[in-house]
Image (tube, rainbow, N blue to C red; front, side, top):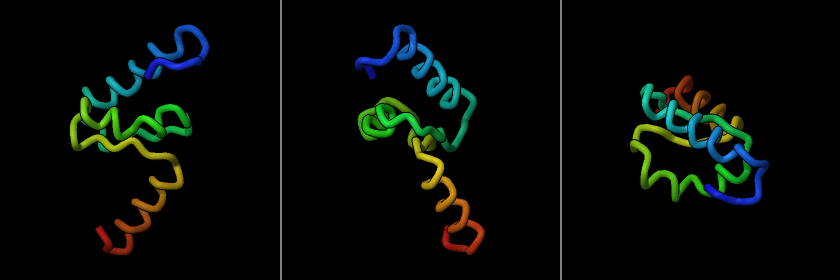
Length: 70
């Protein structure tokens, strides 16, 4: 995930995603464009049960679930 973010930012981002993975979260919701751009790459090292999504995508998932689409 290394890029040109502020010092220490990468470690914090990695820690947050790692914690979501370790605690069994189904979704990691973020507006961080860098993480969203790299989500396919990150998927190769994260559990298949953890999806990285933005807030709009999450709401679409919830709406589909509530309407019986999932």
